Length: 212
Ligand code: PRP
Ligand code: MG
Image 1 (tube, protein in one colour):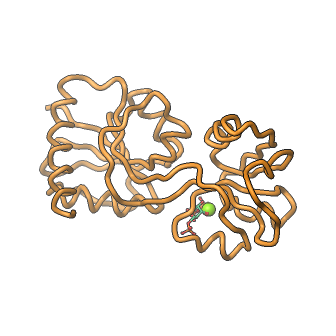
Image 2 (cartoon, helix red, strand yellow):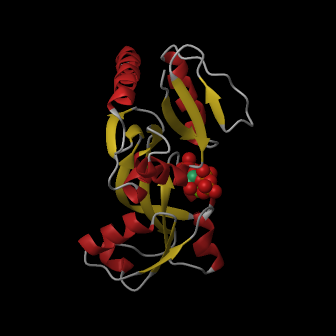
């Protein structure tokens, strides 16, 4: 029998909640922390532990059939991938922040500024929509340090508790999007796999319903 291949985050904030959701769905996974792939014992499912940013490409290529992923990553990198279900956990915002002491009244103040971010496409779309010309500097992690080391005037990154902004003396000035974990599906999923996905989705929906 075929198995549904699902990608979840290898490490990071979605990893634990994603595994818990599968567990709540009654699916037990042979867990090995260092394993990149694990089989479910009682459901036709194979779990792939992948890097967040790589998941949209794996979905596009059909290497995995579906994924639990942050909506923010999907918007940034996965334009042609469809979202099946909002999962209600790992909520965050994708926001622009500037140094606390800097004067900021509206988005026009970003004109001519340097913005450091791991979300270049999301920022580009926002700037274009608001007719702002600014330079984007792509950084893959620890983005909040950029203004403090003179690399940028502003940053755009995910904000959850706000503690990283606070620690780096930054203030959130624009919210570009609100995000949460979602179930995303590959465009090249077969009908047999689709039947298994429907079963998983049914269980997920029941779990989410029970939580509300
Ligand atoms: C993420 C994100 C922010 C922070 C937001 O970074 O890039 O920096 O979390 O969360 P908070 O508002 O609760 O502080 P993460 O720690 O995952 O590491 P990374 O930036 O190196 O990927
Ligand atoms: Mg960070």
